[in-house]
Image 1 (cartoon, rainbow over the protein chains, first blue to last red):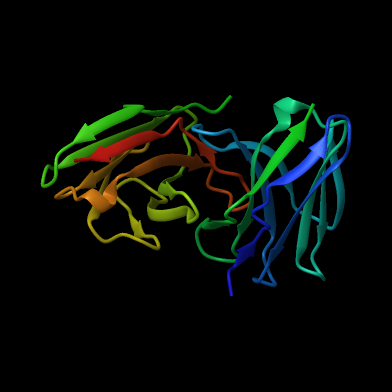
Image 2 (spheres, helix red, strand yellow):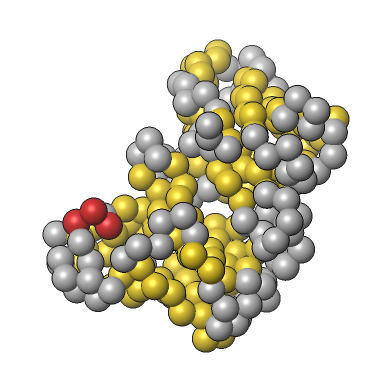
Length: 112
Length: 113
């Protein structure tokens, strides 16, 4: 079983719609969760961090965390073609030094 | 803003060469990481360091070594490059607190011929 799982996509949404990206993780005591955006040929760019259950909003982005279900999601409101990218979910393992496991990413396509 | 700088964006080397990839961060971060990223395999951790002169193996350390002589610099060394080490290499850094996110450099696309 993969430690961090994401649907590889592509997820296609029309411009202006809400894109919903999902991620599940296996380490029940993970404490820190991150979403990165990666454009083709570029490096991952941090867009959201979330540490406690519930929602965290930043502009058009909302991260949602449910530790009981071991589930974290990213919502992108009013999707734009410039949001077309691969979105990586990352989970910080409990204890020890900071080692993060990344999912393989979900490719999002926003159709004009 | 955090700045992680990798010495080369593109690099072409030959099989058997010793290859050095350099990474420098300007935020006084304790932790530094080297990943490789391949299509369909995602990001895989090669080595990481949580302090000067300290290093820990990641998930795929074979064929690689690292050096961290100064806090801001973390070098990845391919001892004898092979074609299966052709990949995108990404350096990242993070503050010592385990809740802090990693910040990535622009990456080095390495081709071994």
